[in-house]
Amino acid sequence: MFSKTIVVIASAVLLLAFSSDVKAEQVSLKSKPAPEQLTLPENVRTVLVSEMVTISKLMGILLENLVQGNIENSASIAIDIRNSNLKKSFDATEIKKILGLLPKGFIKLDQKFHGDANKLAEAVKLKDFQKAFNLYSEMTQGCLNCHSTYSNKRFSNLRPE
Image (cartoon, rainbow, N blue to C red; front, side, top):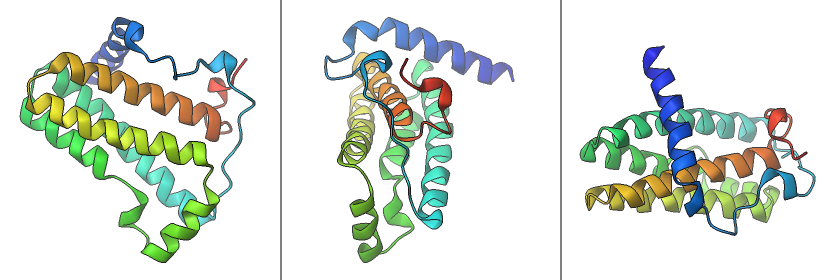
């Protein structure tokens, strides 16, 4: 419990500390259009939710390792996040069908998130923790943007005002 509290506090501090580095393209919740709920086949939804739960856990562990300056673990976890995707659970034909069901904005956010995870791993390997924390902040902002836009029933408190 204590460890989770530290991770939550550290996350909040990092987000506040690096909020000035948030790019202009990141939109606040107040200015977003009305959210849309993704409608996916149950098997796809189940795998997607499972992936998100795994990513959520890994993000907490990643933050814990970043604030400790643990290079090897941080890089490894970031790579695990980068590699976490639907391609592990579906064949190429199914992936093509699934991509046809997903909004372009969702795909763009997903690609940026996984790309940022890769960049974070590289930054940590170079011991550039400032860049790593900035990327972590961008990844967290990406989660917030995606959840508030495409999963508004599950994350109803993130709906735009």
